[in-house]
Length: 113
Length: 115
Image (cartoon, rainbow over all chains, first blue to last red; front, side, top):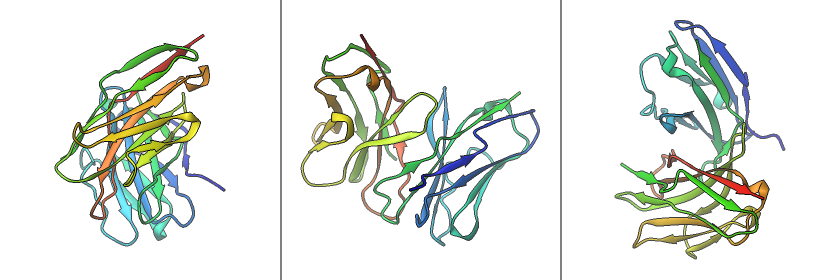
């Protein structure tokens, strides 16, 4: 079946611009996660959605970052006024309610020039 | 708070040799443990997981790992590696209880298998 998909696969933007990254989770998965992978910081948790519960935003690095999940399915991660340190690969994952196995998408490589 | 330490950032080995990738964790609560593999320019793929039961866990591609609670370790092993095992390997941990399933990852170990 279809896995987690993310778009775009690559995004180059100028410093100060806003960007939106999209994640389509596996159908039926109630949990959705965003992580960031960068050379200096490794893999970092950003935000977690579980069903209709309030999301865990504890990993968002600043208020320039936000995410939403519409209809319990597709999620969008928005970065406002991008900075060079935002350059990274943004990974999305989804899981069933138990969360015992997270399935990752291929990621979006963001480059801020 | 939890943390994961992968003791080796790079491990070069020859084809058909055995390999062990080391992982230690720190947590004040009970945990579940995972190993993920990332091939170049791809996302993460789950290799194996420890949730409960037998401390020796077998995964895909001939990999296995052993959970050692007293040493807070979850080392990954393979008795004979192939060129195709060249990839980055990540150890991860999450709380076994509660409803927040976010993973905490180690920094990764780059396994390079040479002919």
